[in-house]
Image (cartoon, rainbow, N blue to C red; front, side, top):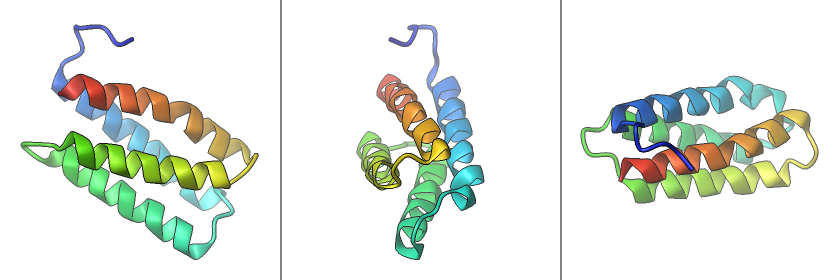
Length: 98
């Protein structure tokens, strides 16, 4: 569980860093073009929400769910496993925002 000392701005910064991790490693995944495009769209939406003065929890959750689904389909690729391990952290950070 996250500490109650984590502020929304710290949570958003952390979400942004984790989102960048996914973005930076996307080319290492052997994804088909549709899955890659879907994750890229989710990444852009998350970036927009991080910058929003009123970020929406439901939008974060949808994007993270989409990314999780695609990563789970990526099988045993090391980078996919690493990203999947980070998703619960991002989800907890999003919960702490609201």
